[in-house]
Length: 309
Image (tube, rainbow, N blue to C red):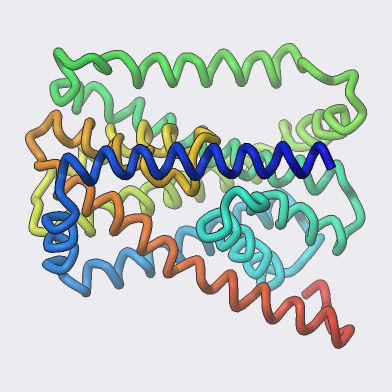
């Protein structure tokens, strides 16, 4: 009972934070101006962004399959991945998408350590390459941050990530905990399989660049010609802010970050807000495939026809 009350409390808190931040952003930009900007978007750019989103999820599934060799077929894993995307994007605060993926994967293979470790490593490798991309781009785009209050935020984030990775993998903190110990066994088994890890990292680069390119295309669809380097610098920071578990699907946090960061290069607040919302909407539309998969999966389960293929 207490656990349910805590979940409800944090859900309400996230709703309040998202609502307050959205109100602050929209009151500054003007709802009418934001809607007018969104209406002026090239539909082809929005549709292309949806396809890029789905392409990135398919590649992410391929990466996940590399970390789960011989467990389930690509079709089944893609279904689970999209279900997770749907819960992450459109049903946040109720249950996390990764938790949903973990639940169904565990039901299919019956191995809790492998389930948790594979999902963590899938996320970790993706975030690793996101940090690598922005690190490479930083020297070329440093002038966009020069003199701002967040001038050294990106290097600080990268350094913190490196330290956290060392503590997790180098010192193996938490190895005395049973479920965490299973994760280290999984990591130890993979650390010498350079081919698999290399392929997973390469896929991660393409996934992250696809996500960043989708926002770039949306900006073009709004008539804004912004250097791609800007997106390589700003998007990792925005993604990091959005990942903080303080809002509903990052709403409010993401829009605030867009306004602040793109404001550094002279982008009007209403355009930055419209760009942020169009990114969220394109992802939300793409994640509806996860709803279809979830309904199909539930029907198959009811009829007893669920397979591991």
